[in-house]
Amino acid sequence: MKEKTESILHKLGKFFSPIKQNATFFVFMYLLGIVCAIVTLPKRGELYDNLWLELFVDLDITCFILTLIPYKVRRWIRLLLYIIMYSVALVDVYCFVNYDSTLNPSMLMLVGETDSREAGEFLTTVFSSSVIFSNVGWVLLLILLNILVAFCPWLVKKLSKKYQSEYLFGKYKSIQFFKKFKPALGICCLLLFIIGCITSAHNKAATFKLMSGRTIGEVEHTLTEKDHAVLYVPVNRLIFSVYANSLASKQVDQLIAAAGKVKVDSCSYKSPTIVLIIGESYAKNHSQQYGYFKETTPRQVKLEKSRYLTKFDDVISCWNLTSFVFKNMLSLHVIGEKGEWCDYPLFPELFRKAGYHVSFLTNQFLPKASEEVYDFSGGFFLNNPELTKEQFDTRNKELYQYDDGLLRCYDEMVKNEEIKISDKVSLDSGKLNGTPNLVIFHLLGQHVTYRTRYPKNQTHFWASQYEEERPELSDRQRKVLSQYDNAVLYNDSIVNQIIRRFRKKDAIVVYMPDHGEECYEDDRGFICRNHSAAIDWPLAHYEFEVPFWIYCSPKYKKRHPEIYKQVREACHRRFMTDAMPHLLLYLAGIHAKDYKEEYNLLSPKYNEKRPRILKNTTDYDKLRDKEFKKKQKNNKKK
Image (tube, rainbow, N blue to C red; front, side, top):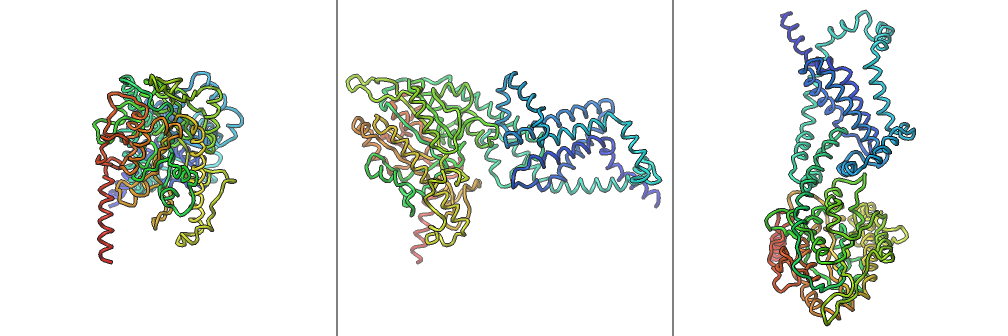
């Protein structure tokens, strides 16, 4: 019986062997993981709740694998792992200290564009006193301690001789200590490993799902899920960034190939100046134009009454994620056609080929170190140097706190004659006098956080003003609601200012937001968007329906009466914004292989019955018809 017990204890003790054989590596890598998690914790953030156990499991498995390798080789592999882990940790913490973000795909993309001079400046900065005494210093201190333990065994030996008898081992030497307590330590390791595996299983499955996405868009959508993967250590974030960049690179290659095949058959320059305004996170039911109880769009309402602005009442977005909308809205690919969005040319490329001067002013999609994966996914193809050259003649180079910054930027470009606004087409020859223009404004609009989307001195709505209309909301919720409506009102002033810059020109202006938004709608009780895979009617109604209008300047209305008439007659047609390129090509008079008249909203051949598929899964019109029948049935019962 005693022999059996000893045999069992001996076997249990083996569970401690991987850690014992790689003790220094295990201890310092564990400490590195904890230190990095703490020093990169955002304000008001919380540590990953399974950090301690999952880190133990990962390192235990790593140590087990190391024990399978011969000792002479193992030493060098451990050294290599030390170099990789510490290097990645230093970069990760440095990025957080300087850019307020840990390693991400955008940072890796920027690193790829860094030359040798910039790399040298970076290394100089890393080892400056200001960085050493920041949170980066904790990683450097850990490296120093690790070196002391690894390369100064005489110091460790001296310290252990001095203190082991008094504080740690009593009458036992260290070897005797481990021999006696090895079974207990083995049991502890086994229990921690089992519990850690159970608690970490979900995150491991989520990480596998994240790292197996076929496209960068699919990866981004995975990250919108409630229980998405937590990349809790720097090396995981690096691996993900490399993976995301590789996926983006594949689509860039496809887009470059498609751009190389762009050919314009003819162009009549029907509209000398076309302006596309892309809004952000605009809830249709918070627009005064569409019946909202607050005056959130007084300027647009005034323009609508003048009949220069035509409001469309049945327009939806194909996605409720900006990046997905941009990809589908810029590409001539229309949902339902064969292939992917990146297999087709982007409409700005055709405009440039046709001779239009294309300007893109964005308050979102500029590469920056602290960029979220969502902006990376939407902007990687807009910021690629080769694709940028194919699409745009003029771009802004900085982002602004408020969207009026884009107006100042545009005015400066016009002043410096970077953008020359053409005013007319000769009525006799049909030829353009000057350079035709396509100007794209991409606003920050009503993107969360709402209170940061408008200057404080332009606050018009207050929480107390909603007590009568929304009594069911708390004071905090009414405050957020008022902030959202202030953002809508500020957006109204911005689009009005854009129109003012073109109202005396021969110009047509198209306005569309990327997607809708929720701000305590009915009894749903949340803001922003719900990225559930299952789309029900409320989700489709609030997050996919968008405001949409076309403005014709007085001069444009006079010179293009047929287009103005088409705009007025089309205002009740069903439309999904993935077909936007075909409308714009028609307005310019551009004829090309990929232009399809059936997708042009103003064409008599427009296919209004085309299925409007949300997120490639759900037919919007079938959802709406089902909801309409349901309401009819309920009304009959009453």
